[in-house]
Amino acid sequence: NNCYLLCTNYSDWRYATSLLCTYGFFSTVKPLEPFLIPFLTGPDKNLTSEQVNNRILPVWTYSYLAVLVPVFLLTDWLRYKPVLFFQSVALFVTNALLLWTKSVAAMQATQFVYSVVTACDVAYFSYIYSVIEVKRYKKATSYIRSVQLLGYTVGSVLGQVLVSFDLMSYDNILVLTLVLIAVAMVVTPLLPLPKKSMFFHRKNHDAPEDSGVDIHMGSNEENRSDTQTSTRRFGKVLSLLWQDFVECYSSHNLLIWSLWWALATCGYNQTVNYVQVLWEHVEPSQNASIYNGGVEAVSNLLGSATRWGELYLGGLSGLGAASLFLMTFIGNIWVCYAGYVVFKCLYTLLITIAMYQIAAGLSVERYALVFGVNTFGALVLQTILVFVVVDSSGLGLGIIPQFTIYASYFAAIATVFLLRRIFTIITSRSDRPTLEESRF
Image (cartoon, one colour):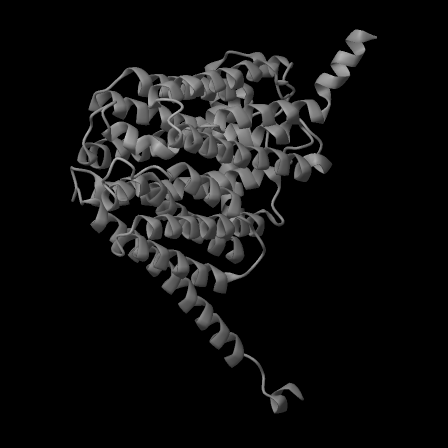
């Protein structure tokens, strides 16, 4: 009876969801993150702002682009669980490097390892769909996304309290973070291993007719080591991915929302990655970073969503651009904080709208594909932006010119989408039949 109850609980959707939420919480509580730039440029690491801005931070963008596609395919092939464990290990290594190393090369290595962590997020968001029933998707998704937001918020508040009241040094905060990550690492082996995945291990009734993507996990075909068979199966998976890609992006509505997603995410990542450098420039005193954690916590909590159309993509992107311009040119730390909160909330609002619009009518498999493609597109754009604007091999601009470009970038996005909406309205009105024409 005890064995039966254990197996029943183990397979229950609440068991998997609870473990994944536990993992998501402990892996996202990062109390040092709002104070990363002061930590790197302070006496602990003694790096210059130019080294951090132009030589260290760009490595994350380049590395993320390089590892995203391999990690996406590997995640599906290994069926998520091993990748979640690997993510926790990489996160532990990231913080260990921050704690015990000091050179520019070591910090660049830290950025590379952290890019692997972020690429593995696809395993966190896809795992639950392979172990629970379709009817539980909405509830489980709300749980795992909410708990991750909670983790970021708790981490920001915790960091703010520890720094403001001088309860811990930066090094001790990193030690605390390592303990939290260790908890997440211990949780991953307890997760059930999915019997299927989105593409490589579909069940027969999930795969399209004649796709030949998968056989049962325990079959002889799956366990064969023949190289030709494995190559053929991989080729069929790629063929299936391409067919789904073409069908998804043939939708005009999905294409528009995906275009905004990629463009805005590129600019958002740049802003979030470098905003602490701007704060340090605006208020270069020892107390410049005293409220960073509180600002991050507020911006996380105020992000909300509703469903609107393209007009709001342009209008709210324009407000985001205005916030960035204020942050760049006013030269007041409080204006910078307020502008960042507004900017981050607007992006959170719009990206959630975009996700809902894109998810409507898509299967889980196709949503995962579109999510990956849009993220990859954003990273391509971001890589170009980093190389031209930030990297010392390119223009290597200072932080003020950088944020001027980011603000102009969002202003351009706003202009494009507003003009497109105006054109659509004018075209639709001109195509309407007159009253006399409609009588015939």
